[in-house]
Amino acid sequence: MTLVPSLPPGERIELPGRGPTFVRDFAGPPGAPAVILLHGLMATADLNWSGSYAALRGHVRVVAVDLRGHGQGLRSRRRFRLADCADDAVAVADALGLRTFVPVGYSMGGPIAQLVWHRHPTRVDGLVLCATSRNFRGHPRDRFMFGSLAAANIMVRLTPAAVQRQVVARTLAHRMEGPWNEWAWSEFRRNDPVKMIEAAQALGRYSSHGWINEVDVPTAVVVATHDRLVPTRRQRKLAASVPGATVHEVKGDHAVAVRNPSVFVPVLVDACLDVIGRMRAGGEHEPARSTSGS
Image 1 (cartoon, rainbow, N blue to C red):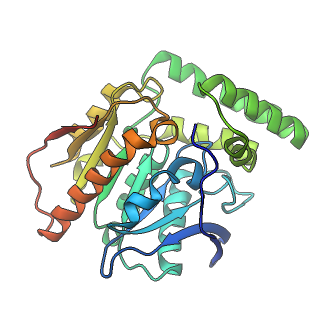
Image 2: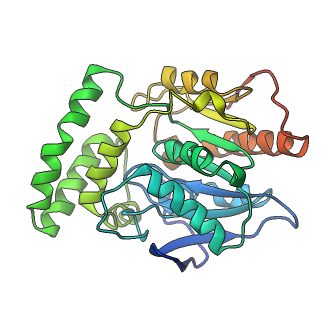
């Protein structure tokens, strides 16, 4: 596990009609396009992406946002919806003066990135989708897990906040392997436990099967070849569903971005540069190809 990263100050910005949220905004080279990084379920922007900031900012303007209910992100009494997160991302772009951008989504951030394109197509220059899928409940095991979340949501709402955090911590300890230092746990503890369950439920209901083949911007899919949480075959099906999408393989499991950024980041940068290159060439779709990270 990476030690506590050295991070410049972030800022809280007000999203009109929505509330305050937390972002980090890294300037890239003059005239460079912007990416908005969208993290996974139960993560935060820094936990998911801190290992990627330095490499990406050499090529693009990097905006990293804590999603609603996560970290220092927007808090709302409204039930968690992936569509609201997509709209939040566009609201962040508005607040920062970004007319268009490339959503880069990891795991749960992948559906949010897809929804940014689906709901706001004129704002999206390209897509980078990492360790993610068109849906998350095809296997009977997945259907059972997501089906049980409704009862879990009721139980958590009736549980004191301190106990809620302990339950979430135990769940994470069970799901995640390897050593997690105190900084990582402090990031996890910023999350709203009720919203984590609602977010998982939203993920279980999500499907882009009906429209993902309509994506008309340059797209790259980063496939984690040893992923068991979001099976690799689902990640490849996503890539095959997007016209002209390129595949960029990284040898790692679902947490590779956090636990092994030295392996993940070069593949992420390659995927982003691939999309940017096609954007600059006019966005023509190229035959799908595959690259492998070491």
